[in-house]
Image (cartoon, rainbow, N blue to C red; front, side, top):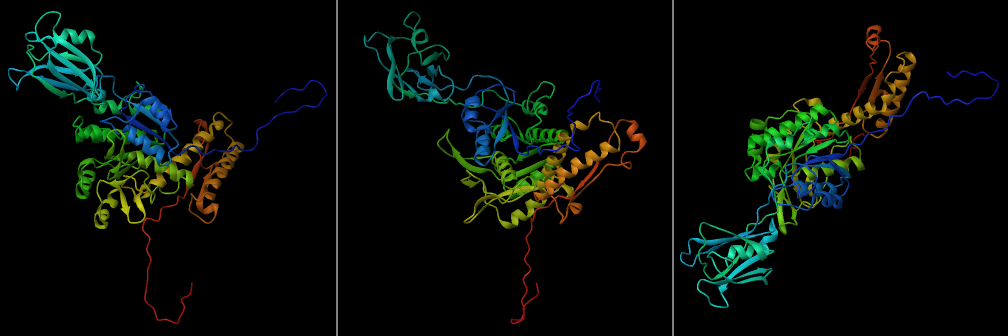
Length: 504
């Protein structure tokens, strides 16, 4: 209290009886994978697709990261963090082997594009007679887009200043000559360069995805980013398809994702099932091989077909990016308490597999959230379960609601730390928590006709006896009754004699 020494009027600012708790964000995704460019192992906040392409580049072969991020924004996602893993490495370049004139089964030399990636696929070379007709001389013409771009006349495969490898290396801006054994005279003809891909720059391992919290690498580095509420590693399936990581490696990464989310306690892992499986196989993989059991993870299947700007055709991609966007859209339109299911999957042309009702009956009890196509209703998410065997945490919206409530209270009550631990503080804390939970109940997130049925807050001498106070602790007990989704809607229809109205 201030000390007053002279007469006068004084104004003091005092704290009100309670402080409001503001709800935290519930839909901030984190995507980890391979990108065309951008910083490595540095989580970047991305708020739209244009910002992603400016930071991490366009779609690339061998990675689903760009597809997932695009689908996230398309389906209603607002902001996300992107972590690029791997390291810089040379991309495959387009090449062509020029056959020898003496033996068509052997190469005289190899022509390779200077530009890495798919740019070299637009090049071709032609071997033609030299203009002076010298012994062993020929003319090498390099074409780009079908048009002549460079010509190297009167070159040979012999030693000296007319050597084709020497001349091309010194003058060409498009190609270089690679020796295949000893250079020999080439056969006349035209060849197109091929094999250049703009894809994964370097081979990756499960450790690249998992990373280290201490070194701030992989998704483990996201421990320092408190805003994240969803974690997805979509291109894990891309490297699996290429044989870079086997199925055990996939499971190791997904187990690490689950462990990360359980450790943080404020986020949920969105897992993809391996591609190319039918309903029975995906069930066997889920139950017999993977065997995940966590209330902090959800699994979706099958893959969705989308348009691929890179190839100009449709392709199948893992659904985790679409699902993260749908979670965000559902949270924005209805609230985190609404199960993110029975929602249209935007951007999906078709599904990897159209499953039947009986197949779905075997998948849903095992926590496999199925994506289905319905005539006249489009492609929709038709599951909202976690991978937990505990019935109390069976539904995804329950887990995410608790994450929201816990994180909001945690951040909204930091002012309590080091306050005098007495009855006055207990009452202030109770008023603060009750006010926040009342708002949650009014949003329809808690079950009960009255606030008393929906939640309770207990902070008194019973929860804070002298020994607890002596340890410097303040214990507040909170109970909430979350709403559960109407997963099975049952209409019981009976036949009755007409003329007699049934009472309501």
